Image 1 (cartoon, helix red, strand yellow):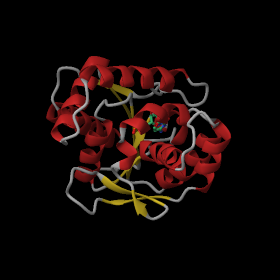
Image 2 (image 1 turned 135 degrees about the vertical axis):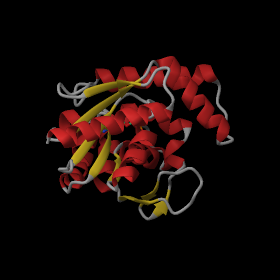
Image 3 (image 1 turned 90 degrees about the horizontal axis):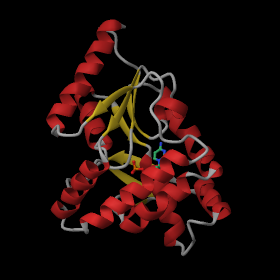
Length: 230
Ligand code: DC
């Protein structure tokens, strides 16, 4: 059975992409690479130095100079990987609500995308990778052997994020999460450069009303079908 070189998984905020992609990568023994952490790391670094996400020149400078490293998870606290910024573990800092609120603004800057897309593509081209983001199938790795666009309604995504935050002991108001996701969807899909949209040859998987096991089974079946076809 021929192996797929690379699998691209795109979709809107909180669609379950990274959880399912990690599971898929583990099942296939592929590298799991969530590109969203890079945009989050830049945003966090800008805010941590007292900077403003609206300052495009600053964000671009930070993106160009930041040392972002992603390593296999060193702790079993729910993380999928360790995210190191300039050598410091910032895995949870990059998930703070302040970062959620600004990351789509930062990710829309051409200079920021240019600084991050090259390294992402180089990792993708090495193969045996499940890569997650918004523009993997359209821009970063258009030659991916399988492209999945994981979708779900905004209400469902907010409900899942609400549960996730509650379980992790950092509850947030449902309405605020809903607003934040709506806002990010709008910014991610309307930006000029590499907007969120399914690639023409992507398979759209809608996870509304399905549990994680069902969606995972659907994704695995797509991988197997693509391998058999290859
Ligand atoms: O998947 P996430 O929520 O961690 O992504 C954080 C932000 O980064 C998201 O609002 C859009 C941006 N992003 C992007 O523009 N391109 C990617 N390939 C990955 C993420």
